[in-house]
Structures are given as structure tokens and as C-alpha cells.
Image 1 (cartoon, helix red, strand yellow):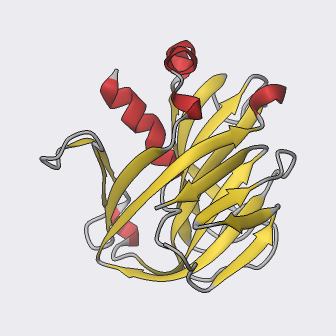
Image 2 (cartoon, one colour):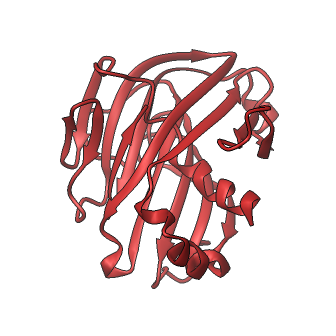
Length: 215
């Protein structure tokens, strides 16, 4: 169960490479703002909410952050995630984010037939080809854990995450935030044909969801 909770959290990825001051950024779509050192997306109706952060990435990268759910699942749909190794950021609403990879956590009680998105809670990995095109690389049904997550109260907690992505090898690791020895509980490999990965931006996204991010 512990491993699956961490697998769910991989989709929240890298909203925390800032402390008191954000790096160069674009509030591209949605209703974003800062309260103290915390970044909020406050519009539960925004379907393509996105903030771009200018962060050069190559080789081994580490993304420490925390995330907190703030609302928006009442209508039975919501999601959040992050594009990593983005080559060029688009300052506006968009489905994709240039050439990049999107790691995503989704909840949908009425998924579109044939979309490849399972009912309820699921995780996805996308390869972004452009601002308007993405390929779904993998989709993982997780709805059997929905009731447990609600009972545990995890949706009301601020959860620390430490993610490592090696742009040279394509390896992705999610570290266990409760284990001081540095063990990890989830990893996968990005396609070798795209390596090495390099990018100048990170794009944090929400879809029909309010969430906050910090360090």
C-alpha cells in the first residue's frame, strides 16, 4: 500500500524548485498566485491551467517539492501533473508543452470511451510532441485505492516529494519521503530513442482542480 501511495504522488512532480522567489515564470493559463512562498492554482474550472518555470535541465535532475490538494473534485473530475525537460514554453493555454514528458495523476468518473483513460483514479505518462499533440505512453488504473485514500485523509495533507530524472539514461525514480536512508519505491525508464534529454522549462499543470505547491 505504501508503494502505491507513492506511485500516485509521482504525478505531482516538480513544483518546488523555488523558495521565497519563483524563477523566471509565466502564469500561462488558469488562476495562479503566490501566498508567502506557496504557489496556488485557484480556479477549479480551469481545464488547461499552466505555469511555466524557466529551469535549465540536462543530465541527472532532482525535483524536491510538496503538494496539497485544495479542491475541485466535487464534479467527479480533476487532474494535475508536470511537464519536464520542456524545450520551449508556450505562454498560453495548451494541451502539450513543446517537446517534453508529462507525468499525470487523473480522477475521472466519466472518462471518454476509447481515450485510454480508466474510470476513477489513474496515472498517465505522455510524450509531448508539440503544444497541441501528445502521445500516451502508459496508463495505470488505480481506482481500487480511492476509498483508502479518502479514509486516510491524505487529500488534506501537505506531502513532501523527491523525484529524480536522469536525462542521460531516461531513468525516473521517486524517493520515499518517510525513509531517511534514501530508498525509492517507484521507477521507470523513458524511451531510449529520445535521449539525452535537455530542456529549459518546466510546466506545472492542473485540470479542473485547485492545488498548491511549495518547498
